[in-house]
Length: 256
Image 1: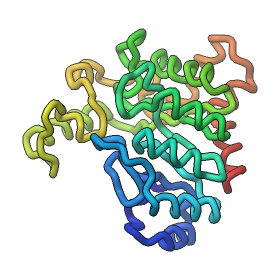
Image 2: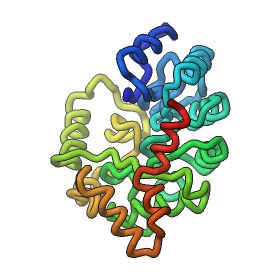
Image 3: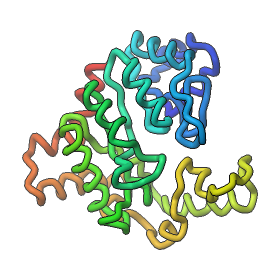
């Protein structure tokens, strides 16, 4: 899996090369814009480019799963509409619950569900914290899961935790501090905090207080804790299976 298609530069045939090397899933872009479309970091949203159009058609032809997790809203909408096969938002959530550009608005999520796609809900630190559950935990994570289920149906929702082993919060904070001191290649924008290097507007003080995401600490904990939460809240075995991997497997079978 590649999170961005930037490595193909302006050559659509390089998608075939990547496919030959074993790549079966690729993102349109990773937060910053590229030749295919606008990323979620950008102030302007130009949507999918003409070159991006060609790339979507080629990925469909090859049977490569298309991911729009880090694109702008319009790029995601354009891709969903154009693609002849369902696509994935592998790690994001609902902007209605967490108002950041890292999450997607209902319009995008509904379009995804209508075209048979799947969203994997994100659990990286503070990204799916909510007003009801401001201390990021499995409860705020599952609030996003249930919101998406209610909005687009349980067949189009899954887990895309995007977590890691080790101090995930500490990694964010170190990079944020380096950005403030060294710039990391990005000059300050008026009205934009240091957290924009992540492609989001993150509350750094809240991140410092977080330490770790309760119940979603690392990849080994995530899915089993989601299953436990769903059992406790009355979900059936079939419903749980869909969320913790079944919907994703169905999507892969359809695309590949």
